[in-house]
Length: 280
Image 1 (tube, rainbow, N blue to C red):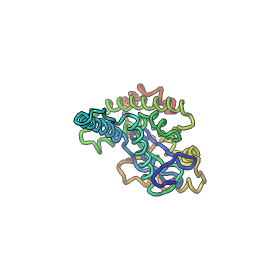
Image 2 (tube, rainbow, N blue to C red):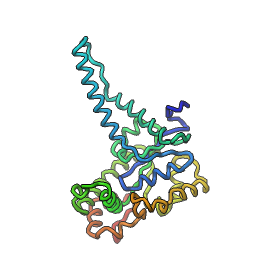
Image 3 (cartoon, helix red, strand yellow):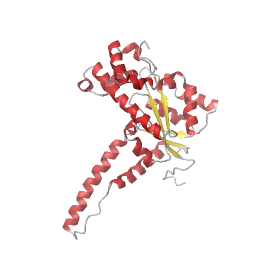
Image 4 (tube, rainbow, N blue to C red):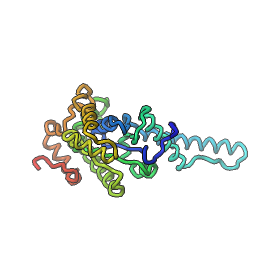
């Protein structure tokens, strides 16, 4: 195989992992990258590239039109939407190859949470790809994202205002994401795996086996043990990004009225993933 080209065949394919921010996507990415037959580098931001390509082509087409008007006036042959798709596909494949860091693997992973809003496009561009969506209780996402954004975003409180307003935003977005992913999974049942963050933390070995069986790679006890040891939450206690790493820490931190607010918005969707209301 040409080392500069990723060919989607029976041996080397693309894997996309994603979820709402602070749902455990980085943890999942690290786990995937720890398997000898899988690579998955730190999170990408492909929306930046998509917007940049459209802006670049729009400006370049304008330049072509100006030049054509000044010369033979034959009609400029500018780039079109499918050209963006073609170039973007090459960029994603290159990113996947770079992410493997020279390791030859069966699955070249990409972690980008924005994929959740473009699942159909990615599925169409990469017809042999698989998708792993990590889900986390919206109450936990609320408190985890609150603390994370307070740490990294200087004016976060101007945007969030207060915990209840933030909880309302997260719960609404959570429902939207779950609906998109559930609909996508129904249309592509064999290409999508849902994993709960809580199961990954509390039942790690069993959940790792489910993930790697989905990918059709080694699930031997030795391999799973090595991955579990290499990615233990305890190893990341000094990294503020991971903060507590517990599956139900939200119970100790969220006020009852905030929990009730989240449940009133996301309650029905939560039940689909076995998240019960407080006292339920």
